[in-house]
Image 1 (cartoon, rainbow, N blue to C red):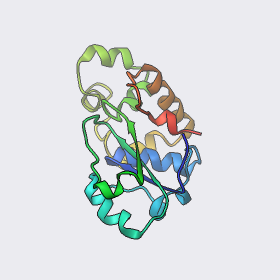
Image 2 (cartoon, rainbow, N blue to C red; image 1 turned 60 degrees about the horizontal axis):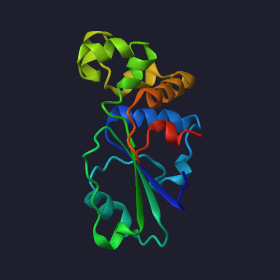
Image 3 (cartoon, rainbow, N blue to C red; image 1 turned 135 degrees about the vertical axis):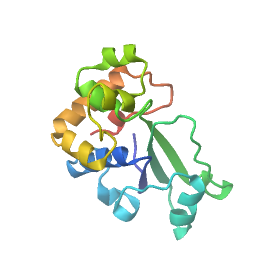
Length: 172
């Protein structure tokens, strides 16, 4: 995957942002903080907001936007004026980012049989009550190798659709 001169990383939620922060802090991604607009992870979810906040600064070259989200249906509509200037790369974490915890715990097949949402499974079966909190994610994945292993396993067991990307695809 090729980077543009200008890049942005937009995370859907807190857990996604903490995971990307951990990967950035450990230089595990194909981009660094210095490669990102504002040198930080962004939290604007709509194309319109992104356009208003960042694109009206007169960029002359293409911008690649990496969107980290669990929904395949969430649109990122840009006005026609910006569509040719922005390449959007959706990094899908469906069904939920909490799958990384389930995979790390070696509970994937049990989870599949449960019929629960990943976050519910983590809370009720794995007893991680605060699985969505920044503090939990940061502490749970403090060993970056554990996080990398879970990300790679997630790609292996996921149903990745054509033209879709996972967190593993943006690892160095």
